[in-house]
Length: 278
Image (cartoon, rainbow, N blue to C red):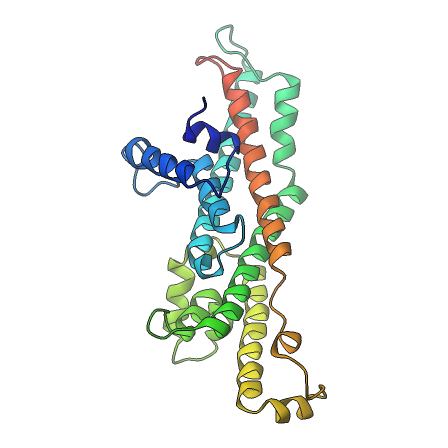
């Protein structure tokens, strides 16, 4: 019978099975934590399990901040894998120019598989999916907190808005230092580009507008509807629909599959080559 760790690695997980969760937690506590450096990302199967444990069977919206950290780890792992592939191909080119009997080069199929992962449009699309997922999760969490906010348990909404959309809120000089800190320390902003900062400003504006409009509606629903041309009987959820949860989950699954494919390809190449090869 396969162990919990083997099932997690194979993606054979019943997320409603509490016994499985207990067995996997024990494995992580006793086998993974003692061997993985504290500053390293978790192994891919454990990382994927943790992400899906938040998403399945139904997404737990209160855990979105934790989900953002896990997704950031997944993106870092993707980046590290790409660097690993670049190094493998670089060594292949080095030894191909100076053949050595003790070194087995990559075959044509292996080389093509690795090079296809580094296709620039493909990499750009992957990064775009990641950033869209991050922004989707941030917006979804803001919408969720608007309905469920408990000042006794939840951090101030302004803190989350700064953490999620620092590029937008840094226009306020009073909180600009906090925004700069968020860009540096929140892992989902790691390696953010200027174009991505512009998108963060745009989505931040969207989040701020939601907060403003929702507050006006709650203060006087009839006046808000009249001022904005809505039917007086319009419901809050009709006026302020939350981001599509299913679409966000599907995008996360697509991103997971992308990282798994890259890691599996590298692992396959390495397993097919003995220690004295590439």
